[in-house]
Image 1: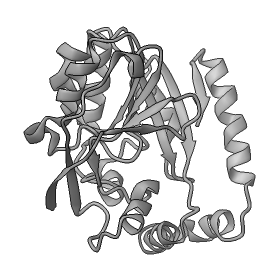
Image 2: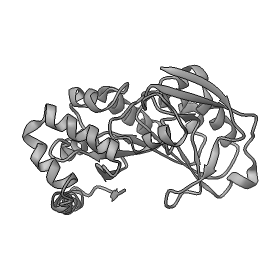
Image 3: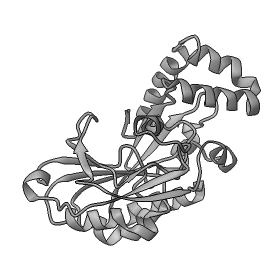
Length: 262
């Protein structure tokens, strides 16, 4: 992993995410190295030579958050990195940002895959309008290793449980749903005693680079599914996801589960 410490003017930016005012990305790059990561476009946009998941820029700044720019706003941490990636344990960029944020009245959503968030329970409990989103799209750790790095299924399940036990509103994002591979019902059954709600997101392969990578993987390791994936992602047949969306709606309503689609 190539680590760079870089000086920046600020770590916040105006959001392009619906319902969010600003995003906070303490790092550029992400050691999770998810095969399907949409944020990997930053590699080309910013001129990196390294493969996505093999570099990390640690943002250093003297910028201090101000009450006027924070209060009453909705912040998202993070939109293009994992703010609790394994290097956060050393650099504590996210923790130092949280120390500033606890002084204000605002809404914060944190998205992560990593159990390191439990380190900051003391700070998280001081943010009244907080939601934590833990992504989980399989209970099969072998499959998880194929498409992601660094965050075991067992650790995520523990994290969901511990956050909820500490009074933190925890959302399980079943994301992204890999066609015919993600068993969303199994994930719900495993987490429903702790998750306050669920967020569903389908695998999006708009990036040609990511599409090639995922389809190559499916062809090599799940060859029996390749024709089905080709139908969806090469011939733009949305029937599978249209049917799945209706199935998920019905299931969540029957189980009285709070849910939304991303």
